[in-house]
Image 1 (cartoon, rainbow, N blue to C red):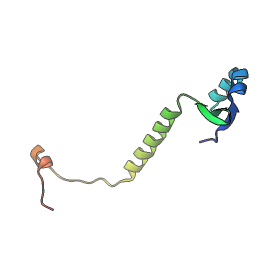
Image 2: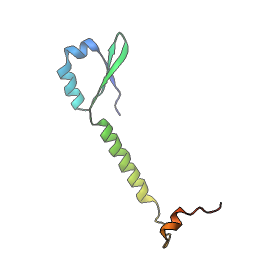
Image 3: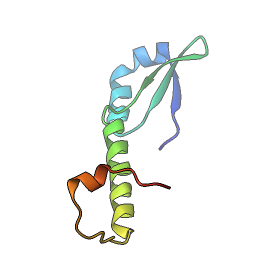
Image 4: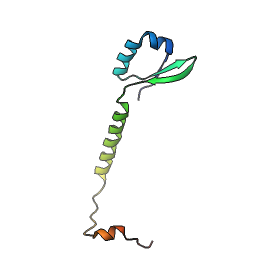
Length: 84
């Protein structure tokens, strides 16, 4: 993930169109007011992209696991408690 750039609220207001173009290219900005971060502007699909990345990682991991053959079983056996 790229580092966020800080931009003042005044500058964000003045250059909002240019800011949005940079956001479309994947940049994220922290908007500050009086030195404090009050908002974050970033691509809307970042969360979805992160979720997809983690899903692909999970699938790759699952595919590396050995297949375990457990044989035939009855539905009731799935819910039986076994002593430990």
